[in-house]
Image 1 (cartoon, rainbow, N blue to C red):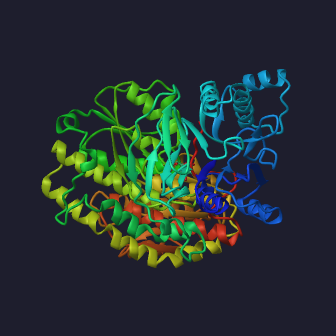
Image 2 (cartoon, rainbow, N blue to C red):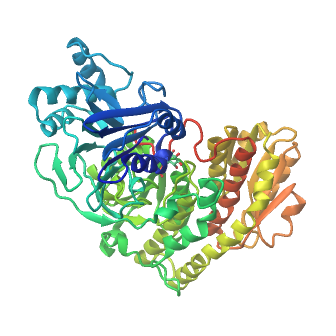
Image 3 (cartoon, protein in one colour):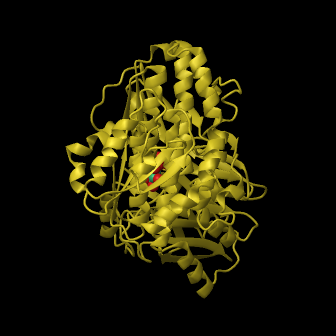
Length: 617
Ligand code: G6P
C-alpha cells in the first residue's frame, strides 16, 4: 500500500519519479504527489485520484528541472483521498522539508497533540504529517538533518517507510524503514529508492534491500546505511533479474490481459532448473532444510492471504497426497492471533507474491518466535518475507502489475507441486517411479497452459455475455474447490458483483437455496478418467442445480463426452494429473472475470478500493 520513489542524480528527476510511480501505482492509486528541489527551492505538486491527474496538474503548473526528488502514490489509511491528504507533506516554518510515508504511524495521535500544543498548524488529516513537522522542528533545533531524522524515526511506532528531502540540504534524500518495504537502486553518479525494484528497474539492476530499522543517506555519489541507533549497517547488493520490459503492457489492453497470457512462460520459469527431464525435482533454494529435519516434520502450516491462500489450498492436496504430511492452510491474520500450536517440527510455508503482506510477515515472525522453521514461496527479490525466512522458493513469475493476481497464483501453485514432490522423495512417502511420472507430467504443464490460453476467447465471450449478471456462483470439489473460490474472488475484485465459491458437496447444506431461474453457476468438473474420480458426484450436483433453474458453465477435461449433456456451455482444458488440473481450470476463470469487468467498462488493472500489496494489518 502506497508506493514511494526517490531519486538523486543527473537525469530529469520528474521523469524518473513519474516513471517509477507508474510502475508502483499498483500499490495504491487514491492520490499521487511529487516534491523536487530546484535552484535551492522545494516545489511540490499533488493531486487526488490516479497518477494521470497528477501528470495533468504538473502540465498545468510545470516544475523546474531538478536533480533530486521524491514521489508517492497513495492507498488511503488516515484521511480520505483528497488533494490535501495526498503526499508529500511539508514541515518547517518555511515549509522547506518534504516527506512521503508508506505505512501507519500508530502513536500519531499523541505526537500530534504535542505538536498542536506547541502551535504547529496541520494541513491534512494524515498520520504522516506529524513526522514531517517533527523532523523539521528537530532540524531547526539541531541544525543536523541526519541527526534530526534519526531522533524522530526512533520516536515513531508502527510501520513506516519514510523519505525526506529538505531545501537546506539539497543534495541528499533520507529514508527510514520499519515494517514497510524499501529498496535502494545503485546507479552511476545517481541513486534511487523505491518500495520495490520495479520503481527503478529501467535505470539499474543493482540493488540493496534495506533492513529493518535502518536509515539510508542517499546522494548522487554515495549511499550510506545506518541503523536507527546511528551505527553503520551491513548491506548486501543483489542483481535484479526482472526485465524492465516485463513491467510494461507490451501492446496488451491491460496488464491483467498480458499477465494472463504470460502464464506458460511464468510457470516454465518457475520449473526451470528444478525439474530434470526424467521428472526428478531438486530444490537447491531449500538446502537449509536438512534431510534429517525433513524426515522429522510432523505438520506443515501454510500461511497466506487472498489469492495466495488459494494456492496454499491447492498445495495442501498435493503435499498430503504425495508427501503424507498433514497440512493446514491458514489465513495469516487468523493464524497470528489465535495462539496456534507450533513446535520445532512444524514447517511453516508462507506464500506471498509481494513478500510484503503485513499479515503474512507478522504470522511468519510469530511462527519463528515459537521455534518453527519458515520457508516462503515469494515472487519478489529482496522482499521482507524472503529476508525473514529460513529459505525461499522464488516463483520467477516476473513483475505482476495488475492488482488482481493471475500469473503469480499459477506460479505459486506450481511451486507447491515442486515442494510436495521434493518432500515426498525426501521422506520416501511415494514410490520413486510414481514421483518420476508426476515430475514428467509437471514438465508438460507449460505447453498445456499454452493450449488453455489459445482457447481463452471462448471464456472471454462467456464473460462478456454475462456482463449484466448480478451474481455468479462457482462450485468445485477437491482442487476444484479452491479454484472455485478463486474464480469468485476474481469476479468480486474486478466486476464488483456478488460471487461465491462453494465445495460442491456442501451444496445441499445451504447454498442450493440461492439457486433460482437463470442463476449462472460455473462448475469445475473433475476428470472422468481417474479411478477415484468425483466426476459422477459433480455431474449429480449439476443436475440438482439445473433442476432448479441454474445456467451451468462447465470447466471440464478434453475428451469428456458426457458433460455437454448437462451444461449450457463447456470450456475444455487439456488432460493432466488431477491435482495439476487446478492450474489449467483456473485460467479460464481469470479470463471470464477480465472480460466481464471490461464489458462493464471497469478498470481491470486498478479495481476500486484495493491495493496489490497490503502492507498494513
Ligand atoms: C492483496 C491483493 C491480492 C493478493 C493478496 C496477497 O489483497 O489484491 O491479489 O492475493 O493481497 O498478496 P501477496 O503479495 O501476499 O501474495
